[in-house]
Length: 351
Image (cartoon, helix red, strand yellow):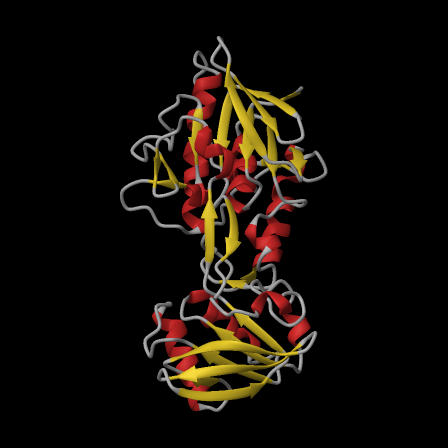
């Protein structure tokens, strides 16, 4: 039986940052994740994808963000149960919980923080009859390492943020990038749409709209694609890789059966207080939750994790009065176990 103060289900960026905020309150954390490594989608799906909305980082790769978060929480020595899925939950008479994984590992904690991101997910695949024959042989639904496309001819299909962002990114990597979308209008961020238009005008991206890839060509490996434009014109392109980016189909998995209030595949929480669910002691933070005005941003997950930890402290220590101190005042335990004191103010006389 693994015992901890806060059991965090999901080791993505929000779950990892919750460890830091809990550590400031002297609360121990243990994380469960079905993936074999921490980082969630940032490490499993797009480690080389740049992220632009992390404070103080004009741009940071998703994998590097995971590395930084792990460095930040190292001194708090969180525990990890990786490669296992949280399967069942049992509430005990003392209002604590036991969570058991699909491999039978039991965890005991007074606080559960569900930080499962979009939950378990699988890519949405286009209805191309022979596409399954080329999966992992030139057809990829997720870009994990952009270097595999170095000096290759690539066709990306899709019209959302992921398709636009990767089309932009791969112009500096691939020999040729073609973006195919079934409409003339794109539904991604306006900045990304403008950037793609600039790259198209500069001859760095080929854009085919309105169009769809209708067939993948090749024997055992992709050698080309057949594209239908305007519903009738057929275009044959020689390519090395076809990357359909139509998003992910998220599923909550076993968590959906825990008696939580669910709305559109997300867990309803009280955002007016502390992101607690309808079951006292169980919180949901990050992309897995929903409330009026919810934004699915890593930045927002960090904020939710902070308030959740404050509430968790009060539940665990109802008779203790906690006075919040800024880290610049109280310091933070250093990575080497020593305390990093804030620098003392220097008063200089003006001559």
